[in-house]
Structure formats: structure tokens, C-alpha cells
Image (cartoon, rainbow, N blue to C red; front, side, top):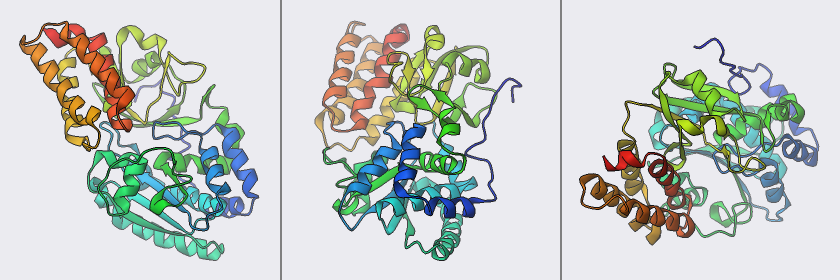
Length: 392
């Protein structure tokens, strides 16, 4: 590991007082806990960045007597593998976050929606959950957690498609609104957070919102767990402070010849070398135009890589994983792939790329869910910044 790398240890630090922290938090006033989450600035670490405390507050305000808490562990974004490690190393932190949420909103049932490729984690998690249930019984909290196995569909990482899958239906996104805090699993108010988000709530319960808020910048508070892969001498999982520049990231993780970084996986943005110093890793807010959110995937490419091949691989993936429900995504992904192949072969002129960029932008505006909408992120950023590689 490079000596100048400032790695944090909030998430993966093995705690010996998780039971005490959970008991102390459950004994607190619900509004105080929610206010701590809101003041901490914690946002969902799945990439969307919705304020966690506000999500819990909205679900708590619902008068329905049947509610659910779901941990989204359907980690299907290419280049992301950090939630697997969190569930392996510190599952009690995730379960503690679920339990506190359940107490606050009034839920008696929770689920961990586990990616099918992570079936090997299930026996270990079942043992941990059984022990956790015994702890909850001693604390007089009526809450139970089950594991629901996904079936390998990328689209089911989208929260409403995940609900459909759990209900035994085809995994397709729902129209929004209504939102999950009003109409989620089985049509009931549901809080759904991803693995890392729930683990972060534990850090706030233990250390308080101020310590969490001291990390990061402006609208990007706290730490972030990154899955680092590609052309790097130190691939792996790292917890770093939010708000670092992409140049600093490349200085720490690159091989000295980094020409691009894909921030956020296939659905994220490709940043070229000339913009490393102008780009901050974080949620868009006051930094709009210079900051990029990420669910955790950070893929580094050096000069030996063909960005045409990279984009081709992404489009292959999107064509395969599109649920086909809406025309912009179903047809658009196929036409983008056919289009770049035609330009590369000389069957279409280079100006055809401009028409493909228009198509990608139309998909961003008209696709039903985040899959179709986000195809434009990688497509446009790669074509615009590496246009010559799409042609020659």
C-alpha cells in the first residue's frame, strides 16, 4: 500500500460493544435518533444519495400498522464488491441499523435482499441473524430478519423492481410516485437502504453525528467505501473520506499512466485525465458540475486500454440487463451498441456519433427507471472525451 494513503476505519473496525451501542440507541427517543441522522448529513450510499434520516422520518410518520425494513444487498453494479465485504466482516452493524430503523418506524419484519452470486454468504449470515434475534429478544424488540435471495437480475437492484421480485413477480420498476416510504413491499410503507448506508448508521449511533459530519465536504458528509479495480497496483476495498479530488485518488491508486477513471460503475461517468483535478468525488449540490456521486465502483484505465472496447462492454451489459419494459431502454441500448459498431467499421460516418449522443440524451429523459436513464452517463462521457477511439 502506498505510504501517503489516508485510509479510514469506521465501517470495518471490529467493535466489541455493538450490543451496548444497540441497547443504548434503542433506549433513546426516536425523534432524537432521526435528528442525529439528519444532522449528520448521511445520504444513501447506493448512489442515489437520498438523505437517510429523512427517509426514516417519512416512514415513521405513516399511520399504517404494517411496515418493513429492507437491506438492499443486490450488489450488481460492475466493479462494485464492497457490500460483500461489509456483510462478511461486520454484519452486526448492518443488522443494528435495521433494528433501530424498525423500532423507529414500527416495523416487525425485515429482509436482506442478497445477490444470488453471494449465496456463499448465506450460511454465515443465517448464524449471525439467529444470534441477533436472541439479542433482540433480550432487549424486548419484536423484530425479525429474513434473507431473500435474488436471481441475478441487475434491474432488481432498483428498489421498486426489488419489491416486485420479492412479491413473486417479474423484476420490473414501478412508476413513482408513490415512493417506498408510502407504498413499498406488499404496498406497505418500507424503508430500503443499502448495506453500506446501514453500516454507517451504526457509526453515527456510536460516535455521534458531529464526528461523521466532520468528514467530507458540503453536501457529501462522512466516509465512503470504494471498490478499486482496473489498472492499479493496489486493487481492493478502501474506506476514504468523501470529497477527495479525482486527481488525489489517481495519485494514490493509479499506476502513473491513468488516462480515465470510471466513477460509479457502468452506470456512472467516465472522467478523462484532463478533468482529474477539476472533479470531486461526492454528491452534487453546491459543487454541481464538478462533483460526481458513486455507489462505490472506481475503475481505473491506463493508456493501454481501448475506450471503445470499454464502452462496448458496458453496452453489452446494458442490452443484457435491460428489463425491456420501456421502449427507450429496450430499443435504445441495442441501437447505441449497433451504432458504435457501425462507426468503428466505417459503415457510418463519425458524425453519426452525434445522433447517438442525441439518442442517449433522449434515453436519459424518457426511460422509466435509473437503468435506462443512466446509460447516457457512461455513453456520453466516453464518446465525448474519447471520440477518436470510437472512430479509429
